[in-house]
Image (tube, rainbow, N blue to C red):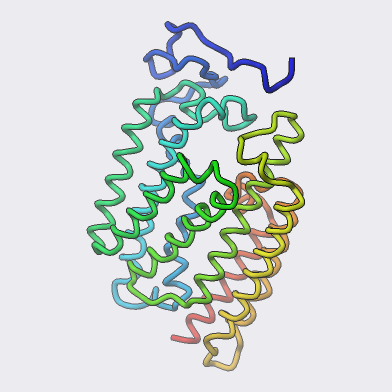
Length: 323
């Protein structure tokens, strides 16, 4: 029988889930069940909160983090977006639980594994999203508007845009851009157009790498994957990778030249070196089909981690020199 015709494993309707309630039919129990608190934490996907660092990076790029109460406002905004994104992840896990059970690693997510019932996951996600929007409102109503826009975009992506080629990449990139805008609103500070372009191109770069990894995995497994993957080709996605990578590098170079350093040492220009190294290294990893989980690549690759640290030091020196 072809892999695409293998039915999901079905548990008896009375089989207990790890939290003590009825199991979701077809769930895949994990070898070592997590307790309820750990399962809820896993449902929130804290490893992926790294993406919300863009909220801090945006005012940092503008050199505004040392001004008055800006650090506190931006940190609160970042926490708010962690709540919102965690809530969205919970809803996504409910929506994707059947598909996740056929994935080598996603099958261990709490909903797919039967540790948390879908209604409980939906309630948990909604509470997190509401808390995030309330925290945004406490900073400024305009931040709440950006947060709601991010929420609307990502939820609609789950149900609509992820099934439409090209639009799915644009929607994914839009989520990163809205994070950057949230940082500017929370500060508040104006963001350079070139910085926004860097974020946009880099977001398309990451989103395309994720699609390429999914496509290559589907081809290797002979499953065909999700419907939208059948509208892409590996060669076409690699071309998009090349264009978005070049766009991000060009925009970053322009942004780095935009503001002169004041102490005679071109710290900001020097950041182009580690940025280029990280971008090229990540591009090589994605072309090999290993970009399905960007946060894992960023935290596990020694070259990228070292480059990011060097970039952070050089950028900090440039901010200090400008201040």
